[in-house]
Length: 371
Image 1 (cartoon, rainbow, N blue to C red):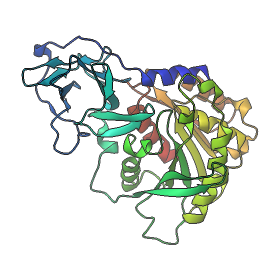
Image 2 (cartoon, helix red, strand yellow; image 1 turned 120 degrees about the horizontal axis):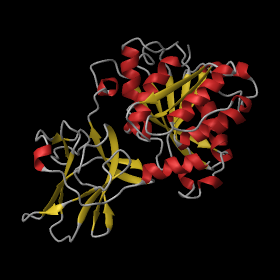
Image 3 (tube, one colour; image 1 turned 90 degrees about the horizontal axis):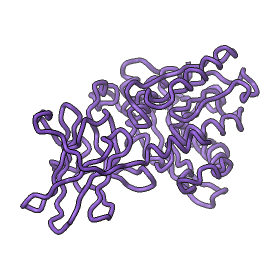
């Protein structure tokens, strides 16, 4: 549990400092972030990975932008111009991919009105996208697209209707007789069931892989993991049983009844990022008859002795960023292979506990599922 707490602490950290880059070091080819609100010019990003912010706060005494992991340490303190706008550029290049951020004005925390909002750190945060050199695999392309729909399923255990999102591949509504395997895909702490499609671009990754003929089409189900019910710092007290009941006893039967699924263990997978990986680890071990494909994305590892019946497991996929703990992933997978498991390790280069790691991980995982 300690390693989960450390990883989750990293994703939540944002720092504020005053260092500014020199003008000579910056290429002035800034363009609006792809995650801006319609018609908004700021925030901007350039080809080097710098980000530039502009906030209108004429009566403020201080304005700073705090970026999470993958941003620039020290954050960005903005400077006030005569027109009432506060402006500033990050002190260095940011990691490629998606980042949460927020604005601190005179000690109060706010979202940037120029940016779209994404649920992370147990609140709606602003989002910015730094174009990645390999972004083609999650780009919106002129291919056939699947459908992401919201469902509300009854949960007797929580005495409520619970929400989930379901991705169905492009062929789902064309061939009404075809049935599909299912992947249950979990978000991390502080996020919810919107994370994998909004921040993770999982639907676009699926569409592109299917169009390229690289994967067997399958359904993806994204549910709220009940992880935010435990405050950060108290994660050691998190109990898996309530969510395990919702997932295995309530959601899976609902999906199998209302969608054309191949409803057996061999055609059912579970994966999760960060704390969602911890949930995946626990549930797959507790309910070995439910899933045959396991995947932990920056979410710990498996040991051979934890798995009671090796014949039930078709695949174990474990990944992380190169700035996390790649040696633990590689060592765990080697141990699993030596024990006779079909285990695969993936390390995302030059990334940490962030969505580019998990986008890349999903791209590598999807072709391995349901072979």
